[in-house]
Length: 98
Image (tube, rainbow, N blue to C red; front, side):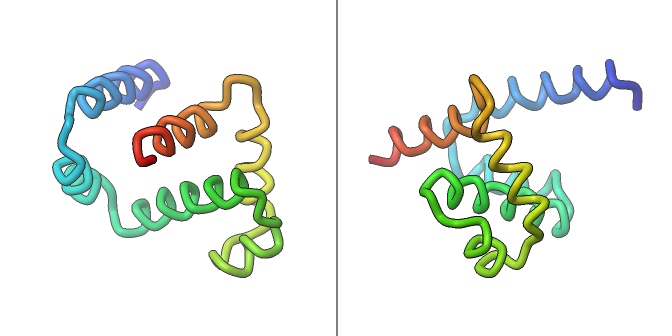
């Protein structure tokens, strides 16, 4: 796929998901869309940025989640970026669940 095709597909997927107001449907969709390995990767990334956001040390995260410090460092850098999408989504999630 070209970058243009990938960007269009991601845009369509984002739009489709944003229109769904059914958490269970989104979960089922993601499990259909992604392989087990991809699901594990996405879940691992989400768990690590949530832990970083809570102030858990990188070494503790590495031990708890069984992932490399390199992946954790990348997540930490993404969280620190101006207008971080990770941070924005975490904030939205926490506001909705409180």
